[in-house]
Amino acid sequence: MFEFQQYLGFLAFLTILTIGFWLMIFLLTFVVPYWVGGGLMEFLKEKRDAKKAKLEE
Image 1: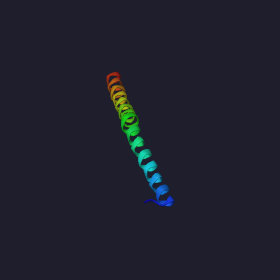
Image 2 (image 1 turned 90 degrees about the horizontal axis):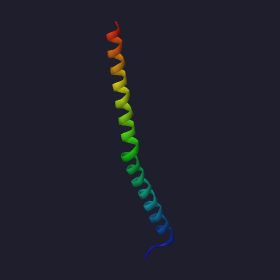
Image 3 (image 1 turned 120 degrees about the vertical axis):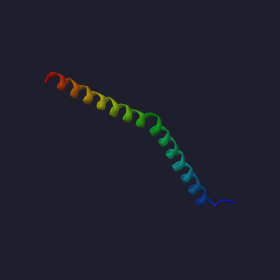
Image 4 (image 1 turned 90 degrees about the vertical axis):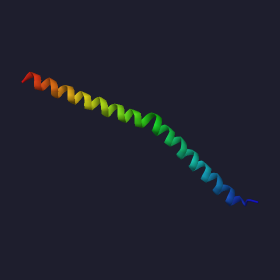
C-alpha cells in the first residue's frame, strides 16, 4: 500500500495543512478583530482631537 517515505510525506502534508488551518482560525478570530478595533479607535481619537482643536481656535 504505502511505502515508508510516502507515509512520511503524507504525515508532513497533514501537519502543514493542520497548522495552516489553525493559523487561519487564530488570525480570523483574534488578530484581525484586534487590528480593526485598534484602527477604529485611533481614527475616532484623531477625529475627536481634531474637533477639540477646532473648537479651541
